Length: 363
Image (cartoon, rainbow, N blue to C red; front, side):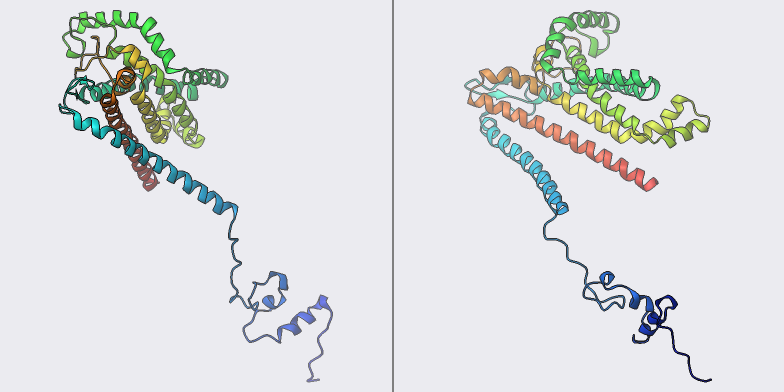
């Protein structure tokens, strides 16, 4: 009566499993004992530890992709550094031969016996024409992008977006020829009207002639950067979460209030990136401005009188007739343009990064 009845050896009653658990040390789990050999950690004793992790393969797709991306990023930095070294090496002899102040002199005569040239007027014209072009293009581009993304019917928006994208594929020489031969007459008449009615403003003053001016070059430049800013802004606006838009509308906001409170704040980093990309295109434009500007070497805020010049346009116009010193002077001006574009890109990157950091902290 006091004897313990023998346990069944049938697997259905669990007898064999209970019996096997008695052979384990105290505290060992019966489930660990029941685990198949194939599921235990290699090198372990099945007691929940002591086994090493499986070794990763020495070479795999992830490691190859990581190395490829690292090489690509390093190559970009090396190329930028190589460009800077080349420009500096070629510019130093010409800068040493220059008899005037390179930063303040308003003139360009590097081919003379006593070379004298300066970057002041060229840098001023580059920044002025690009800033004016952005001032004209950005509001129009954002308006078009908002219409295509939130107002126009889907089919119409897709068709118009495709047509705007085609403008980016038009060569700059075509814009230059069109601006010089077709668009210059309306701009000249408009400049005369501005001079007559608001000539008391310094930017619209002067006695003429009008036409081949900073205003003409900036208008052509604005048309050239318009498709870039529009396309990128439209894609950014389309990425706005639908829940944000529907939430604003559900609270009683109008279509414009929804765009102002949900779409524009969400797309602000993308808008900044699009504007900076357009600015980079405007700063480096060559042929179109060489055909539409009056090509002078003076610092003036007048927008309608013949004149204006940029670094890129001056390189295109003067490179064919330049001697060794002249080519070095042009390369020195290219180094200044390279520095300006680098500063613009770094500034844009910093603005976007600070905006993202603020958004993440607010979230």
